[in-house]
Length: 228
Image (cartoon, rainbow, N blue to C red; front, side):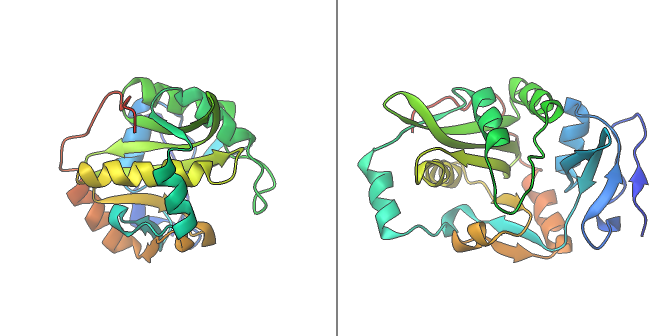
């Protein structure tokens, strides 16, 4: 297998040709067409090195089925208490910038560069990228963002400045995705955090089959601005 250098056109090699670590291609840009083509093909950008974007399709893939989210009794009480005011697509850029600033023990630096922020903000403006936000007394204290195509939601990143704020946002997201009959949330890379929340590993071949079926459905495009 080889790592591909992407052409100027928004094209990708087959996801199944990725290296053992999931790396498939280098180069390209964050144009809306390229990002949409990537997600529809089971590929996502992970980081930038020497001004080049690195695109991945890991095997196995971590998937969370909306109806299988595991939350503790204490967290369930917080969700039901209404402690946090939950909003969708109210301030997408604030969410992604907070995700970029979030310190993570397993990562020396953020992969969410200014190029990422600008690219995904454009995707949001086109109605394909969405945020779920937790507010406490009017202040943004947690949330997540991702991309939606068909019946698939591709989770990108989460942040919190108050305990449980991002988990409550995720709980509300899964609730609405179940109502809208979404097939799965793609958590992308394997993490203990999402495994504890009920995500499970799926081999790439099966994931790609699921993805093909999910994106056959119309995309819930546009603002998801609703009060949860």
